[in-house]
Length: 400
Image 1 (spheres, rainbow, N blue to C red):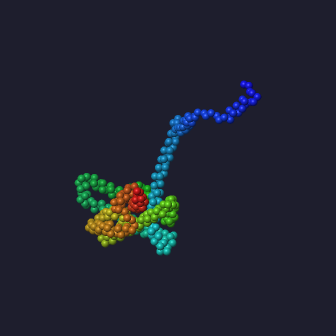
Image 2 (image 1 turned 60 degrees about the vertical axis):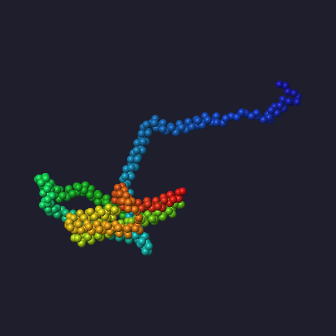
């Protein structure tokens, strides 16, 4: 190409460079992105599936970890089952602390500082326990010794009854031989110890009971001394907006538990005094011992009074049938008086639970946790009803 002297080709190049470039056809953006996203998704799926495939490809490693997890779960279950006794101790101690707290607070309202109030309460409690042991242990030991002394006479008296004559008529000479073997067995202290699992087993059981009682007393002392701090620490675990309601519910629940325990002790004391009076007036044996037994049994809700009515009537029947009939009728009258007069007056300010829920709660608690469950069933039922009344029902009423 030849250029003129005026440089027209150069100007045309400059003109072409300054001119705007022709618009290129639009390129679809998703086209190149689609393969990239597909490849990234495939790689992510591959990374996620790699441990599974690796575990499948290495069955020894997978089996080892599965077996290790199963052993860890078994060990955890065994640890929890072994700690059941500790949890029962803690529950008894906390329950005792809540029951003694109203007495301590009453002493505080009369000007006694809390440490001195706790010391006074536990000193009185220790005196009561010593008095009960001093009354029960010698009586029980004397009664057992008297049983072994009177056993030959009881066997002789039984041989003159119609029941023994019927046994001889039915079994012939086997009945006297069987009776003689029974007498020999019962008069041998080694056999009596074997019935209870041996001397060592009896000693271990007594030691375990005493140590458990000491643990419960010490824990209840610590719980009672730090009960206000425990409540404040529990409130701090709740969000600030819910603390006032939580504090109100907690105070009502603890007050109801303390009042309930105090009411049960009062009713059990009335039962023991009535038993002592009836046994003493009717001339029945062991009135003091039966009074202590009545207090220990009737403190169990619902079934305690009925259970002792049967026990007291049977013991009285062995001594004097006529006195036993009088005792059974008189105690039955007292049971009606307690159910319709004493219990409403004593428990009215402590706890309020419908009768049907009381029965259901006691049955469930006794089935799950035995004596402890039967004792805590009514306070737990009252606590659930209180939470439903103060929390659940207002939320339902507010929902429109």
